[in-house]
Length: 268
Length: 179
Image (cartoon, rainbow over all chains, first blue to last red; front, side):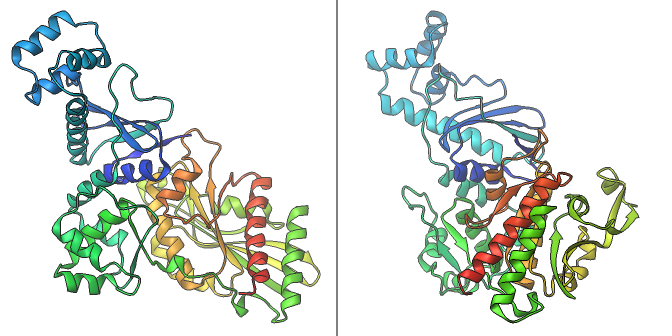
């Protein structure tokens, strides 16, 4: 079974949302115009990322982050050719060059940067490989996707997509059950969050937060994609039976009618 | 003679006509026309321009009509007419064409706005390799956990029956709840 398609139909932000909601484990492979990206996830959290043929070994990442000098980087390349990133990481920690926290932080920064670059891809195809797990020989991180999703949504410039996702500002918003922890929100985003209440429409929130249609839609789109809030759409209105549905208004006859239909369809 | 109706809706080429054909006791009265658009013709040769019409006779006093809506947006003026007085509706979605999911969502919301009657989502073509998993489709279509999304192969009578039955069970449950 496949999660595959085209970036024109599903943006990278929307894909991260799907992976986050389903808490997927596996690798998202994105074929862009000139490069291929592999983004690995474990239980819906970012674990590892690679783009094109870029050297994403631990030594290269620490060198780019100025944690290793040119000489140290060169020496590692010469002497630790066959060493895995996990082995190298241990060696560097034991030698006192870097701490475990610094390694994890720099990997997170690098992987996040890969995702940021992916946000600019609008052409290409994607597929999610359930069987392709984050590589064992590399150090995996465990990064929540909410902040990345909100960040990706900030870059959305397509009015059509925003209008499609949020057709009317007359609807209200409510928080989902997801906890809002460690969120990196902007001042405008916090201002919107402050007013979220099933009693306030998006139009009222925009007015209170002094945001125009495009700005409020983009912020709310990000919060929705990150699974933090949801709209009170007409689809969430309670289902009800309409008298016009039945040729009779007698409740028992209506029930009999449905049971007769069930019996008939079972026999087809 | 008493009549009731159900509506089968969904995007272009989702499998609505086949769904009705699988269970209708009469040859489906299909108003199909050759497709003029090159893009749409690459998906299928002909399409429904007004509606499909199937029938299931329950007994001499009761008949169920199945109406299939045209999938293309330019025929959406038909939707409101077809939705009037329906028992419930089925939204057919082609599991292998994620490019149609957004449209499916719009259609679902439009029908819910016309009538808040029970509905189910049928994820068609689940037998194909490219089919999205049901839970991924649920998330992409933004369906809440209460909405039933059912696997379906619209040419398979058994699966079509299962979808119709789920809708009827939903209606019965709503009756029992007294709403």
